[in-house]
Image 1: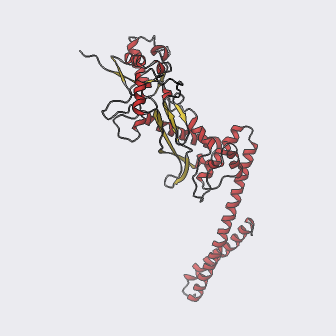
Image 2: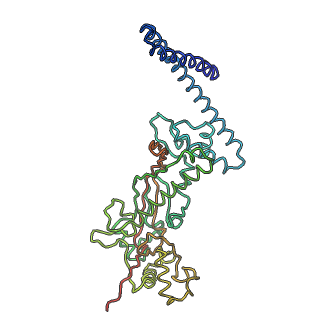
Image 3: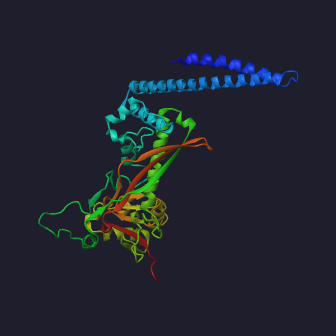
Amino acid sequence: MATLYELKMSLHTVGAELREVNDQLIKKAGDPTISLEEVTGLETKKAQLQKRFSIIQAEHDEVEADQKSKLQVQVKKDIIESAHTEQERMIAAKAEFIRASIEKRPMSDEVKAYFAAGAPLRALPAEAGTGGENFLPTNMSNELITEPFVENPLRGVVGLSNIKGLELPKIAFELDGDGAFIDDSGTAAEINATGDKVVFGRNKFKVKVRISDTVLHGSDIQLVSYVENALRSGLAAKEKACSFADHNGSSTTNYMSFYAEDGSEETLIEAVEGADLFEAITNAIADLHETYRENAKVVMRYADYVTMLKTLSNSSTSLFGVQPEQVIGKPVIFCDAAEVPIVGDFRYYHLNYDGLPIYDSDKDVDKGEYIWVLTAWFDQRIKLYSAFRLAEVVAASA
């Protein structure tokens, strides 16, 4: 097999002769004294040289691409092996995984081994052309799904899992020999009406990340940070959109919302009223059964909280330096999507990702950008509506 150097020399030789024949052809074609037979002979010679050049060029490109690929693998191997910390090795491996998936090439054996060391082999990306699913490596998937995201304020207070075909009991304990241990009539009635188990489904959604050439071929840490931040933001946005969906919507996932309604247009979570926001929230807290009230939190918009403080303080600033929990009596989580404050024990709201996400990639030729697509399946369920209340303001009648 010819070396890359030999192929380059052959290209130079044949290319030079091809240019010379082409110059002769143009010159003699324009000279009426030259016979057509001679011009035709030069055309034939040019075509033969062009074919030779194309054959050598194809072989040259193949050998060069192979050498570049081997060099990239060696560079990645050196980077991973020379990394001083586990964090540096993880970033280098993630960057190679992302670039390989976008460039439609196999990952280096070193990166595969790195991911396999902390994950089952089934979670490794399938090789191109195998027809298998491109699963996100387990350690990357776990970080994306289980780490709390700043963008979704409910993370950290709701239940979270990554289990295929998840089923959960609505109440996680029972007393042996005591079938009537539930002393909250609302909870007992709800379990009798809807059963004692919650079954989670699979709702498919996609997050698309656009990656420019400069980001793709930039530093490992910039590439990994850019992609992971975009994916996390996308996941969080989807979760929030489902948790606080408008109760008037017609989406098949509206049951995930705290504002979901039954067939008679009543919210599934009981609404508690008050003449102003403070009264509505404190009434809602008091209305909860003590089982849920002990760990209750309030989710509301910050703008509503500020308005409430202005009313309570009669325009003074005395309450603005006080922690929200000292004002309301329970911890407060601010979320602009919570148009009506939600009060309750958020451990009874559960988010489940059904199995590993999968990935794919494409290129937007018009924009010159790569598109990295993550597909995931998830479901969010309120385990017990009795554990929550909605705080609604109702103006006092004249």
